[in-house]
Image 1 (spheres, rainbow, N blue to C red):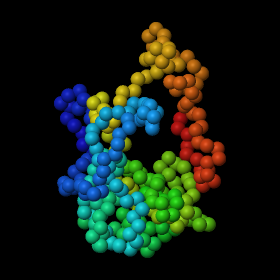
Image 2: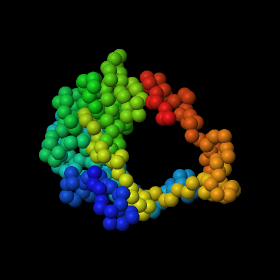
Image 3: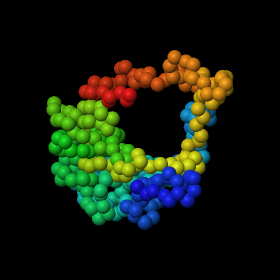
Image 4: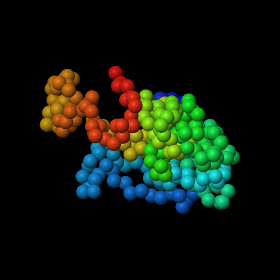
Length: 276
């Protein structure tokens, strides 16, 4: 984590991730592309997600979440920054000359070797089936469906703990505290995702949020009565409603939004604890 000197009001509390671990080499152009920005608009051009727009021009890096090169040794050529995700990414050069981007595990250095396969050594960065990984170990980029590629455990600093193997399933403890079952033939990468200090980053100033494609958010209590259920009143007024509501009067805050008949409900052994 890098802390800036208080040379101005915006710099006083600003901090960024430590980028000294990144390699100073050009990106792979064939693995980058420009995505069309929609600023929170739907296919009709109407705003469906507020507070989005602007932001710096950025390029998307194509990440290999499947890592289908079974048994082919790969060497980490570089650790790079990805503007579309919180974690760092690693450039892998395989023995056959092919190059791909993968999520960089924490503490993985340039020059290290990785391999994917059912018999891969149990070392950080390697990818293998869940049933081979001992109980208590931490994994990331875990598959939910065989061959679909990693779908959970991909954010900066995230790690998922293996609790048990039984009856064809592996029990995983999520960062939220939820415990769920996943087929033990699914693949997962060993170790923690890179950039674990990301949650300690302090934006510092409003302008930096605008660089990140975030537009200002106005409090409902600061609006007029016609604009929000919390609006109006002389000075600071209490909410005036029994329960939290959105701008359109829909109940929020504590309301369950998960579908009761969602297919994966049967896979959840223990729900995450409610924040108080």
